[in-house]
Length: 318
Ligand code: AMP
Ligand code: MN
Ligand code: MN
Image 1 (cartoon, rainbow, N blue to C red):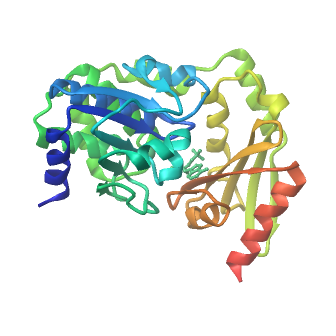
Image 2 (cartoon, helix red, strand yellow; image 1 turned 60 degrees about the vertical axis):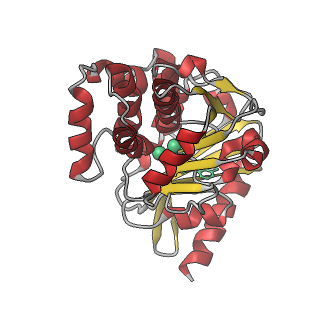
């Protein structure tokens, strides 16, 4: 049986389904949750979406239809099936990890190459530009009707995980074209998800960018930004997440890094490169991700966490 057929079997025999996206979600995680929930409801299932964290979803992601209904929680109701979407590992389900592991069945749908396949059935396609692109294909085999609401959710994951269609295969455009045929307003979706900034957010971005540092580790150039808690406090998550795009491609640097202090002394670190495998670096530091884009979390003072990264870069270059 193909993996899609196995997935279909799990879905058909379930009456109650929980759909779980990764903690600190992005638009692919939220769009995958909302799309999967709405597809399951179309198929007559009782379905709800969950993210395993305490913080509410960032405002820009709440523009995705159905996102307001997602429960942020460390508990799941009794269900027959959990569907984990865009989660590269069980850890990434956050506070829900124990509940996901205890579910009668778990269907994993993801596009992280590092995914170990923690479900009963695993659809892991590392070539897929976004998890929502895999869902687009799954929905057609399940006979789910594509309407503008569903297309909006799928498009949200696709437009963001491809860097606004800057990287990916011709398929991303073909799928985008199918989604656009439903009449979705792609200009408005991009404004709500990506482009919207307040004056205060722009000032924060300017202040973080003015501290950009270029360092060399052996023969490697590293451009990094430090976004400390005082600077980013109260600013929109989308503005903070946009910082990494400024260091993705910097002259004389092969690696771009943003250190984001999410709470006092706790840091979420984003790594980007177009010439080296950053998922190796992130994995060494307890995180994960894709070859060109990965991340990890750490704690400590700025100089300590910069040095921690330098040490790993030196080890990997040996
Ligand atoms: P970000 O830098 O947060 O945009 O994340 C880039 C990629 O790395 C995404 O595909 C994430 O799923 C992955 N990633 C980020 N942080 C972590 C983490 N702490 N653990 C595992 N994967 C991560
Ligand atoms: Mn994601
Ligand atoms: Mn994704």
